[in-house]
Amino acid sequence: MPKMTKEYEPFVLYRNYTAWHSDKITCLNWSHDSRFVLTGGKDTSVRLLNVFKIKDYVPLMFTGHKKKVVNCVFSEDMNRIYS
Image (cartoon, rainbow, N blue to C red):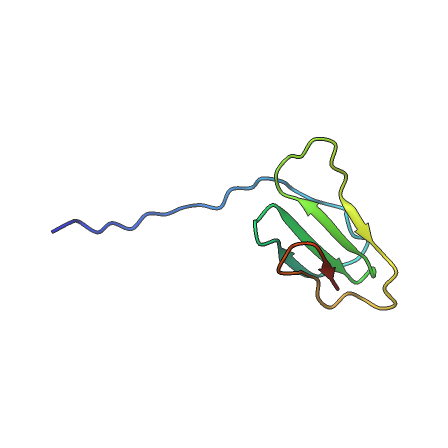
């Protein structure tokens, strides 16, 4: 009979994003391939941040919302962002 053991797998910190929003973050969503993170905040902006290093990548900011961002999601085909 195989011996069952429990293993602890800790989280790994890849990047630390600070000061990207000027107010509290209200929503966070991972892309389907786990390469990008969407964050929306009370400052009425949405940021598209990368998790892994991509050469010459500058995080994108989507503005123009009238009120705080409630939710932000990727489309199924990863071609659109909804907020």
